[in-house]
Image 1 (cartoon, helix red, strand yellow):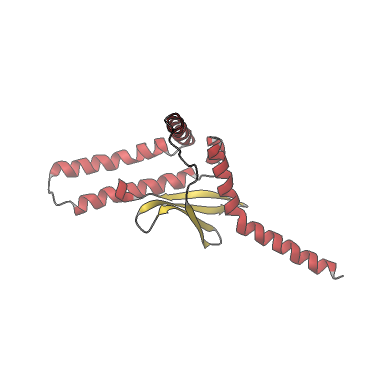
Image 2: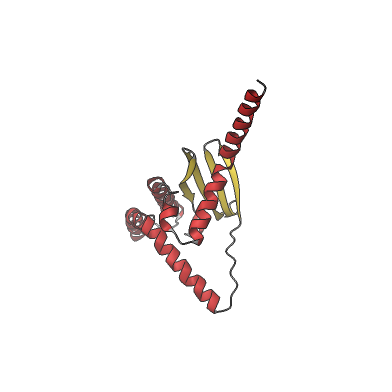
Length: 174
């Protein structure tokens, strides 16, 4: 009779451990897929509509801030800002896709092979910090977020796995 409560407690500990570790397991799978240049596998961990909308909103807000903080009252600058805002949607829609990820990986592979032939030692390790925002929200900070020199990747629980739902870019670089 004492075995049943012990078994239930052990099962609960295993489930809780998996739920806690699941975003780290997803990150490891994404890392392995990136090393293998497997765009399809990486794509399975990305919620493209959500990521696209977030990037579009960030870029449009940046253009609007630039327009507001500009000292110039030039009509051409306003026209240019409107043109830039109109171009954001198709550009982001074209790049934030499984094919766009594959293209980035191919370009990264070309750059890696150039560095290898030139004798440069480029480490594949990316420094990042992780944190839970809530039970269903997980963040990966790449670079220095406080200095606006990093990227924040937001992941949401998707059943027993996780999906990337947002990417916050360092807007000072744009």
